[in-house]
Length: 360
Image (cartoon, rainbow, N blue to C red; front, side, top):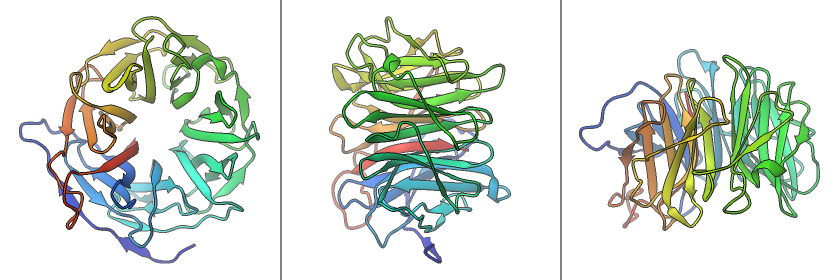
């Protein structure tokens, strides 16, 4: 472990006037495109955002973030983030300060997915060319588990619940993967991954009956882009307009509905939003940036059901964030930040790569 905590640089990103207040907590991770500094954006409402750098002494690209409401501070809980190093920083004060925690791994870790299951954290990714998965009961002490399959490839994002965990990714030689665990991330089994091309994200609903959803690129413009399961073992793909022609990078369950975000396959500048109550029947909604340039990369929901989607514009330089307070029916852009500086001394646009988001 690397001792001590780091106090991060701060930059306040105000909300545009006239946006309604919401009651929630979100954290976005990524990096600065100018000098590759790792970054964290935190928000108490999904509208106004503040910037932190958990590790200002080193360059790092952060890909994943998760939150436990029962660990760390009794009110704020514990946040953990993962990137392309063997450091998994954690914060017990809502992301204001971070402790740099180094895990033991025989190779450099690349953590693309992270979640809280209700009893422990799961981190998924890749070491060298082989996929791997780690678990931790506290976000500090991590144990490597054996995943399936163990052939070359990457485990990307992971979603967790009390009874089912789902990890998605892709093989080094091509094709997608869906892996599930029925014992809190300890043992994993590979499932039929051909239903959804290359899966990009997953979400799990337990209340009122188990439903798991995986979303991805479909493999082609007419391929399956969303797959669902009621047991985590058998998966069924869903296609048909308006799913055809879309690909999806993120999905969440907000307590009422699943919501998937992505883009039109012909152009990454037109965002798509789909909602569903059962993971089978999906309805397209209009995003805040339906006529603008937005490439959604991730979506998350908070305990009050508010959802936030983040990504970049069509140039893959400037950040985009939008939120919904009505189960994905309507969306409002939080900010575009086209004319803002990333930090003092860096002129020009607010260049960011927003990779992942979690809610509390």
